[in-house]
Length: 297
Image (tube, rainbow, N blue to C red):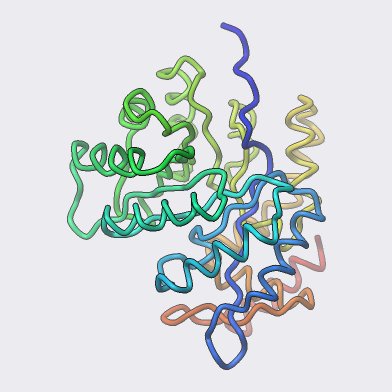
């Protein structure tokens, strides 16, 4: 079998935080614009707004629309923009997906979020309805730790075969075997992306098309260098870079991405406000550890 072509969306896919104005808890569009500019200037290959890092679950619809408009305007066509559109209901997921498409997003990311456990038939129906409502690609996002829904490789490939514009998968369980299984079942035709920061080196080694990560907010260059080395097959170099990055990757995941990344940006002299309640700012002891990790890096 020939190597699959590099998909249009690949490489380091950066997940920005959603900045809030100090004291007002409103979306700070000027700071968001500056953050997008900062990430693109650093060299990331794509921007993914409104993921877990962007606190999508804590925004109302007006704020969602504001972040979408601001992000796409700031990117200005220089890199692809993926927009997280997930909601508890199919109807509002469709509303968000349509808004993102109209605003100029290159793709949307959908994770099935559920109070009641969803059957495979219900998950497939959810993606089918979203896909039928828009004309841009869908990245299916599997992260049972945050959504409460776990999609097997078999289901993801079935949806790839069934939903015309479901063209990508972000796998965030941290199980390498799932990525291998997606590749096997799809004959290498379904691009998969690593969403588990500590797993990145192994994921790239087994063929991940990209790394979906919040880490470039804090240390973009090592992320880019790791991807470049992996793409070139320079695994010793990639391993050295990964070993340096790993403590920071583990820290930001374990402390909650909005909380830790916002604290890190503040420590780097780029304040973006606190995470939205019920999330709380990083505690002093953890903030000191994060400062150490950023200094070491």
